[in-house]
Length: 240
Image 1: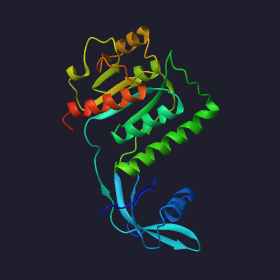
Image 2: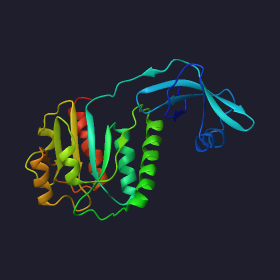
Image 3: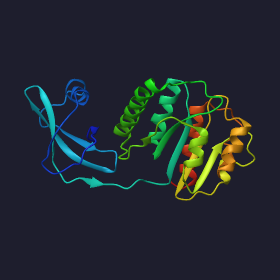
Image 4: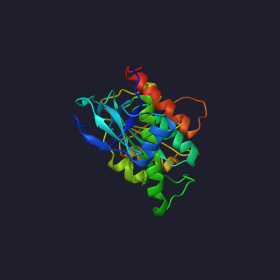
């Protein structure tokens, strides 16, 4: 049976009764028209999920855990995505689709050709919105692991600190194709902004162990490049 999936950052213990946020409660009761006793599937974004039922009391809603929580390990190669900032709609699209494709983390990056500028005051608002997009994607696609969305960083800071067995940076002028890369258990992938990385930034990535790779001769939008490269990696690793 396909249950409505709801994210709740909590530990799930048998018979516990948990409160819901106003937004979640409104979504279940007023949008989905759920009723008292209806069952839903909870997940906490850390691999745990369980069955629960809705409880309505005095126009307020909560949920009761109906079973022992189950756990699933992350599936496939662990992917750490460094994505340069884009305009709001394309960047939101990139977060949604990379979440559906099971990335372990998403780090928004600033680079020389990044057009979008976000100050400290608006960064927390953006991060909250990006997390909601990732949560909604997990709810809809059945993914039990929520990617970690980091604070905005410079390309230099991210590529010098990220740790993975394999590191690649998408670059149209690269001599090596993505299909020629051998992957281990983890991958860091850097994707540039509109206009791509500068040659100096590619040099910086190479100095930190990144391999420049191309994903073909077609000119792709940055958000399309994210989906294409992640899908290709999953295929090359035998997951698709």
